[in-house]
Length: 438
Image (cartoon, rainbow, N blue to C red; front, side, top):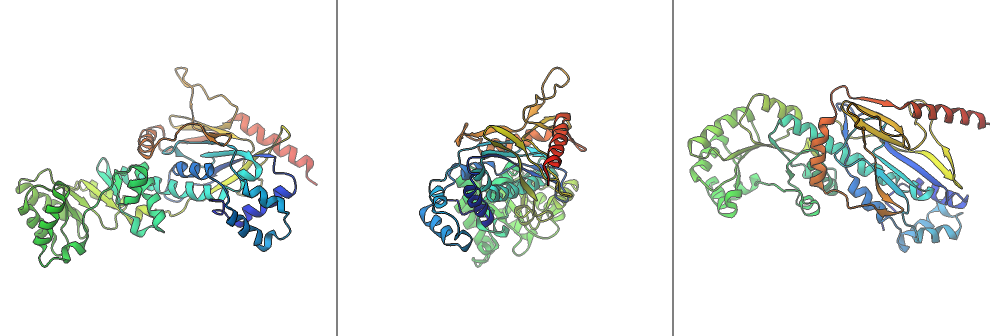
């Protein structure tokens, strides 16, 4: 039912492959980035779960097939193609890096091997899903690192590029290191902890600020997190402190957060509320968070919204999905691009990682042996074989744990190199192409 979530040219090529008898040929495509986005030293893989769900359910309804058939681009296509679409399913293989794995340019994070049409149609969806979530997960890692052990909550749904983008941003941010999200749908779908306080409208809806906070305390008890800057932050803190327990803490959303946090902390401590937390929000990003932390402000939790859910300083990841080999009647042909600044390397690949260094190699190569006789880690693992899920995918919490532990395997100046065998394969493939070009 999700077959139309693609670009038109994927479907016109599918028709062309079908009409020219290439439908049974098998192709291998790899998804990777050529260059890192600005301000990024690495990227973090996210979105695999949604990509896999898409592939396992990839199909066309009768209504969708009828729509395609009426498009002018398909007026010369045989009826057999549309019957093919009605029965269409993904029957291929997928290999991928685990969600939460940091990666670098040139390294495939997902490989699809399938009959040519089945491998081609998913390109658009896979690029969109993996690029977006990887972008947000990477931003979350940066913010979480800047927080230096203090908690970060993703607050950005209202600034996301759509409601669904907000849900997926909450998921990706959690994988990247946030402790949770304000997005309730993300919590429901993916088991992510959800957090929230109250808006200024809550305070303004009551005739007196005290009445608003008393009502919130009655409603939420130990979960009450008071927004105290609607009128006067310091006076708001004094008023909340006079209410006493139960409470979770307070939120600062404006002003000089460092100065205000210090004043508020003193007020809470003097009232016998040292366990009450202080959350800060308001157009935060990793640079602002880092400055607050370096100032040793007594802020326990950061709520980061717009800058996180849109990755505002680097709002796109230019991933590509390129064919690396074909198999026709059991004979393999290696494919690649040789165009300027858009070159690709032939052959399906594996990525091996050890501390401070990655090696991109041919898929059949054995991992390099490290000191002590340990092999390097192979990052691409089977996820789908013959159209069936190999095993249940890790949930978002497991991906988050994997992301945190994987950060230890990369360092500033991380080296990415190509194996000698892959370089030799590229040279042979280039020679073969030159021999057959007209």
